Image (cartoon, rainbow, N blue to C red; front, side):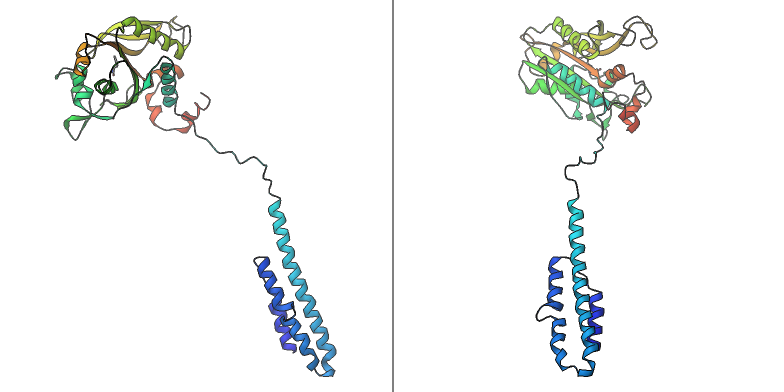
Length: 338
Ligand code: PHE
């Protein structure tokens, strides 16, 4: 009997319960009507009289001890539940560290936003394109230097498959698949085989605009670009158009804006001219319209193209192009509130 009591004591001392159910089955095992301790009590009558006093005491101690153990385990459950309830569910969550928009994305979105207000929608095309879309349809003669390996990246040395050198390739795509009126904006990445420096990179971004309809004039182009320049760089901004040449526009022009740093007075940024160049533009060459299946006797159009890096440099005075693709978070964070 004594040994049994001792064995139960050590067992009970080490009891553990993972949850209320386990605890309850332990209680049943030891303390219920058929429990092991209760069983011992019924055997008590067989204990010889001279031992009854001692064994009786041990039995009572065992029972109290078992009850205490079970109570203690129960208390620990109640406590850990209470700890859970103390979690404040109304507390604001830990802040999530958000990234920032890339400056080129910010400026691209702003350009799109400005032109969408005068009816332009976005059109996209592939970065790997064929000679016809990049050059052929756009009136580039076969011997044009842009078609040279020096300027253009060809894919697998196939002269017909290349990385587009300008987003004007989307222009040819849209004109062959849609009927006028066409009013699209083509943003995208372009590639040119240039040595990487602060002022040139082998890839950069452009936004091309194209408007083809009846009676589209150079005055319409100028008005749209003036509107753009003022929305982008401020209402005081002046523009000027200088004659230029592109194979796909006739007449062609380059547009300058009054230097947005000195307001046109002349500073080192604008090389003391008061003007900075921002884009190329012109009336779509009739050859291009015809090549894309649009009747050049019925329709006219204008096109313009700008480098997103260039606009971003002007807007935020960034003077090293490489910063845009180095992914230095310290640089990117500066545009957090832009
Ligand atoms: N595609 C020309 C370039 O890459 C820009 C341009 C577009 C000029 C449309 C005129 C009209 O430089």
